[in-house]
Image (cartoon, rainbow, N blue to C red; front, side, top):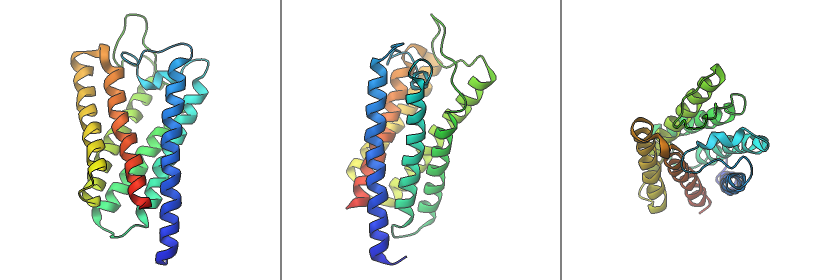
Length: 204
């Protein structure tokens, strides 16, 4: 691929990724205001896919998958190539596929008085497996690609936010399940912010 063509491809897919991040955040925020009014503090984001407007959250899971794919394409045509770039891109693509899989395996919403993530059905178990795998894959991808990008403040900041969110999520699951929803969203904030910052960096 010639350098001018690579530049156009990189900018087009990086822009698409940034637009999809904004789309994802908007849909998430709107769904939070609609019935059945899940709690940001106690309920996992995946609960938004269960209920009258669950189809919109499923669309969002697909949008996150496409966003990951757009970033992978934009990164793949960006020099310099390296093992970190290849491994990070592969893990980012895997995380996107895990997000898409959530559409087909809905979560088990907690009963009244229940907290945390405790699946009761086989579909719920598969959902947790894909969600967990996706989080771990994207965090490792972010670490590798942040290293590959070098010292870029915004990318580093959002990576740290995502890492803190993931650690907090693990601790809340073990010690304080009443705030699982909040810690998960902190992790998502870091992931989505990182994706937006990477897109902006690739455009430049």
